[in-house]
Image (tube, rainbow, N blue to C red; front, side):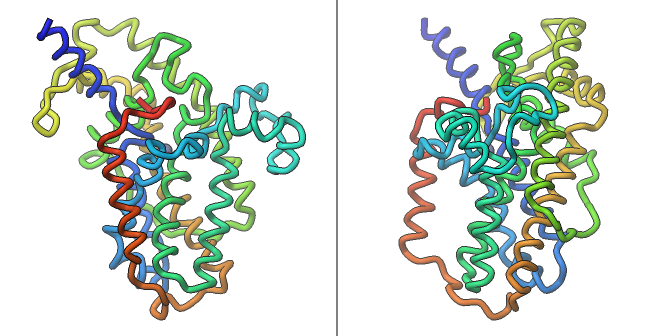
Length: 321
Ligand SMILES: [Zn+2]
């Protein structure tokens, strides 16, 4: 009995992963900083640890704030077939057609990115350093999520096709194994985005188009791969956990033909370009002369609460495991 409980616990731990994985979200925000012009680098570079560490706050918020969940995904296939023209891209028109409840039920990530970009532009206008950094970290997270194909599919964890765990496999396990040593995540420069809404929707549609491939290729590999070699037990921070094996992961990554690396690169470019666009639209304020440079006691308390609640809470109803 004791042994069974122990194995169950290990299996639960193995599946406890997060959107893009904590590793990839932090990396995306960290590397996006290097695409910025020097006028922005003066603020972002010295604060890179904050922007990288707080890249995962939105996922932690999901554990304590029910409204947070739908901000990370959109089950776009609910609205028909690609390119989902039935779904108005404008929020008010979409609410009119489907109701706000429906939109919230199936996820709102494309609109939530736009709201955060607007807030960041406002923070730049107000030269409010604490808000600029906080909103930059948050925005980076939501943009990253929008690039993950399974964040744009109702079959988000392969639950309709017997592929439970594929969500974390694609966005956590694969980057953790290969990004650092094998991928090229250095990209040129951020670009000004003329039409942010169009840009975000086109990235959403790319993710939607790739979701089927993510699932189909894993299904085929699963059918061919020796069952006893699909998973492996590995030591992860002192805890033995059940993971997709390195060999299985490598085969999957190769068959995806660099898709995960490509989406991570595009995430980095998109995050930097959205930060840059917000700064330009705010009139390119001098980031060496900002106010509100320190976080207030209330902000610090909020960060601490977020961490404590996240560590002690059960996963939210729709976690990305
Ligand atoms: Zn997320």
